[in-house]
Image (tube, rainbow, N blue to C red; front, side, top):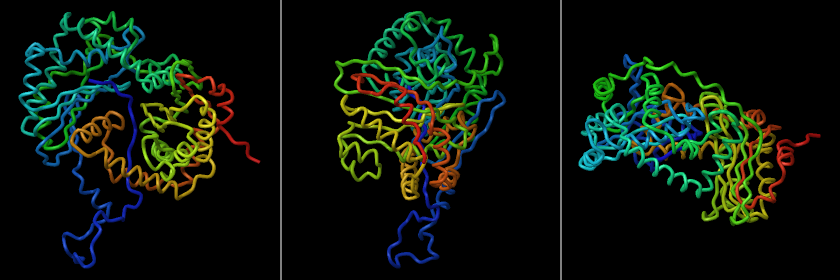
Length: 481
């Protein structure tokens, strides 16, 4: 069980005509079925994603490649964003309770059944989604779906289990507090989305965890676990009609009706340029994140921002080749010793997003590294070159293909995209959309989102040398003569 911040990393080829197979001299004739095929035609041969919508609104989506293993899961459009100040943390609490026994299975019986199948059962919660999934042999897909349906619809939520899990979550919160990257990103959301649901943490405050009870869990399920907000996804050896029938059989009782009042649709979350600094000189290194407001999942500017995110890149001191990585920021960090590592990010939500960078550095090099970061951001807005954009497009293609290696990441991609985009974007479409991004597009889009914008800043550790906010704000534009 885990909680996740939504990430948005895709990649496609820059040149659709490039062959996937490099032919040896005279090895294959032109008419041979083994001859090289263009990349775009190879993409069209990827198994299609089939989608069906049941009468109760549940969408069933599959990518069947005939694999002996499969991943199936339920993606629910309900995360911490749909909570209130009073019940913040209930979605994550509910995820923990799903594996503690149902009216048909005890916790020990559930664990034994999963072990006997040789399967893997897991779940995670993000700010906008809750996910339950199982990885198993293709012949056991029916059993896996039945188990997932049982834990989602028939969990007992016994008081003894709630109290036990309450202690587990409180210990998890203590562990998260030692993960400074998670702490910084929570602070970044809190300052960027002040007074909005996205500003809350996924785990919730300690006082909420101590009082969440069975009635809170049931109310959250009755309010948010509705057919139109659920996607049953499958990848691997999962025939589409089989998964449709299994979903009808085990999720047919899920309705669109509300026993309680119909919940309000969350309003668009307001971005606020601001900062949070938690100075702690006992820590050896400073952990800092700087971000501007990005765009939502469906915004067409998302693709250029993904390319721009790749142009900034990521680097860690433990990695070799910083000076030849192609990233100016990595070269500066490596040669000048300005940082221990950095990671550019593009975090998307339905109506907004955070585009920025997280870095770890020595207290004495904070100002220099921030200067280099903002210099790179201004280059994106003013004089980025075609060769750099071409490199970024190629890196995106590699990232996408690597991330879709296996039934679990493919299944996750299907479920997430159906909730975010209302469809699965085919790889060849992503190829075309990213291939259309050139240097002029990057300059235009980055000027809109980055140039002369108020950033959100979160910093933890010995951050005395981090310039005041107005100074950071002044670095968000170049004076043009």
